[in-house]
Length: 384
Image 1 (cartoon, rainbow, N blue to C red):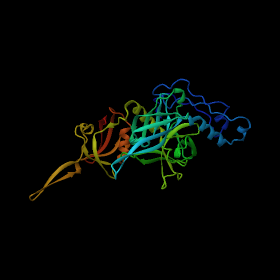
Image 2 (cartoon, rainbow, N blue to C red):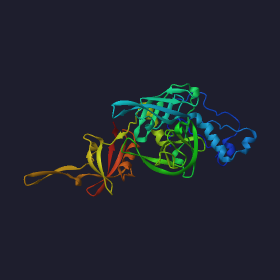
Image 3 (cartoon, one colour):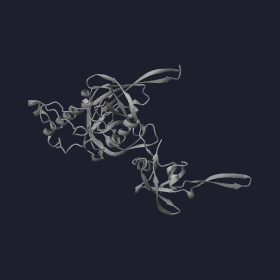
Image 4 (cartoon, rainbow, N blue to C red):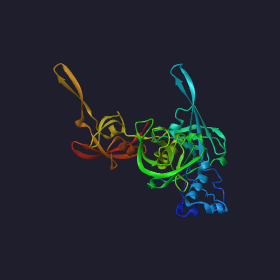
């Protein structure tokens, strides 16, 4: 994962093979004494895992030691999020107050809290409750509906804020143990465990026509209220945000999903700085998916694609007697097959290629035109 903020952790012994590495001595978790500098969230050094005293330590299994270590390292980083919103009564034309609950994770000593967008979507008031039991009014700093991510801000003493440590979701493997801490049904800081059941799943975004890629599938119990809470590895590092379950009852059925931390780490700095994600714009309004690639239907007038010379469909006219018909001529349109060498088999592949770049970057769009392949350089512009 690109390390734009802070430092990565040095290699550590595997606590599952060497349980004593996870729980060395009886001690309180060690957290940074000074506030984490702005922009270095998620990369504070993890504290030493607390140990268990005397004979009790000897009675614990290796699995129990890891469970305890993860929980004691991270539970103070997990918060309970309560929202107040209103819904309309269609019979009496009234606004009825409604409450919601979710989870979140502290990511720095400045009071930024990471959660799901859907946890706070539409909320008029948001409260965050820390492990101390103290509640704080929260400000919605930034939101990214496409990736179902939101960042809140609370004004709490730095000594009560224990940031999570970010892991690297590109290094995950199926079968790896995972841990979820959250507030299912309002039960604060509940730990559940499981394994990674699959990787690289896709989930439809709740507010856009996009899909969230590289989703982590887990079998750890995820229930209402867990949304927004951290998914952790055996070394107490946050590897994702628990976001959804596959269930017909609304309760855990052993199929849960988490947004990978690398996706989150890319957008969080922008959410804190700008309140939203500034995505690049290529200037293509509409494409048609075909078996060969994406056929450009329409371009944005004056947009990046038009400036670069990409071609869309053209409108033709045809006369039959007294009637004049307009139709789209596909033969003039470019067929997009790749971006910077990455195949663009569907719209989501294409947008993922574009959105992994920055406004101002130049990309090579490979198209088929008049039966020939050619690369068209396009300078990406700032999106809305």
